[in-house]
Amino acid sequence: MLRGIYNSGIGMNTGIRQLNIISNNLANADTTGFKKDDMTVGKFEAELSSKIGNKEVLTMDTVYTDYMQGSLDDTSNDFDLAIKGEGFFTVDRDGEKYTRDGSFALDKEGYLVTKDGFKVQGEKGQIKFAGDKLRINEAGEIFDGLVKIDKLKMMNFENLDSLEKAGDNLVKKTEQTVEKDCKAQVLQGFLETSNVNVVTEMVDMIEVMRNFEANQKVLKVHDEMLGKSANEIGKV
Image 1 (tube, rainbow, N blue to C red):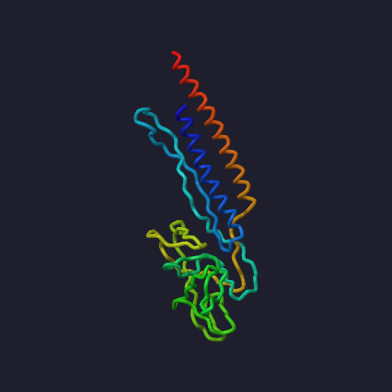
Image 2 (cartoon, one colour):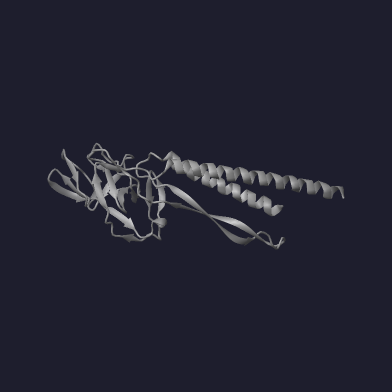
């Protein structure tokens, strides 16, 4: 019975984590360039207690980000940029951070910034624009009128699973992250949509809730049996 209670409790905790992930995905279904999270649930053998002396099956959860590309929407806005292929824009927020969200604008000083005000980085540093016509080609080269002023600093990584989300639709490198050449194309006047499939997330949410309720019922049954056993032992 103790094992049953323990396993049901772990199952419920796993369900709560899954619901939190799905809820966050749904909340960002319309966020430009957002990459959904998911969770794998594995099992491993661990000794529950040296006194019990038997082994219990526990769940081991791994949360990961799915970097599958979203669809590309034509906005006809010169300051909207989308990445076709693998890669990230580089922005300055307490050091270099990376994003797929190319909904950029100019701040009052003429710098190219994200919608949260973080400066977009070129190979020469922050990108300042003074003209009346911005043009960026597929290679990421930036033109102020007819004059090339910089090139977007595009980054790509061997092991995307080593990246960590840093808030504001940004990710950051870790010690395990390995850089590689970025061969992606930049499309001006387009935005990449979120890769969240709302229908799939809703189906997953229903399944997780059913599993949670099933574990809850099993836990209640074991608890009642444990209480009954304790009362009967007390009578003896």
